[in-house]
Length: 140
Image (cartoon, rainbow, N blue to C red):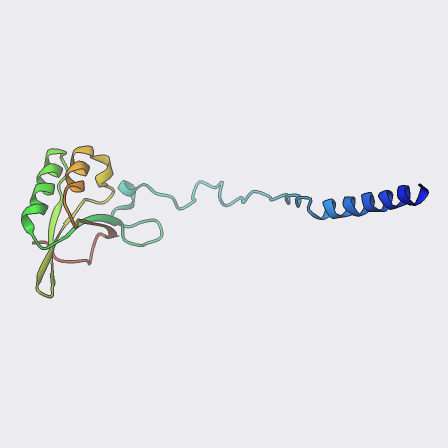
């Protein structure tokens, strides 16, 4: 009986050591960065940036299109005009013709206009890309 008690005591000790190894690691104390609290953090609104972001990169615009048929894209352009969004038309020459695109103004997104978003869902093959506003193609 004494051997059984000692065996259970040793097994209990092994079980305790095994569970202590699986214990979660305590988090380190991290000091706050004083630069992040300063007023000159480099964050700017798009309207304040003047066409450039705080890091000097060009502002990104949403491009919709990639269609060979210009008529389908004109339907989307009309829906955007109803939502008072002035999209600019682009044609990119490719093999076998050109693809037609609409560029939304900087800071403007299609998701903010439910009517135009619904029209875009009905256009098969419509691509949605976010690229730099300048240097992509020439307007029509």
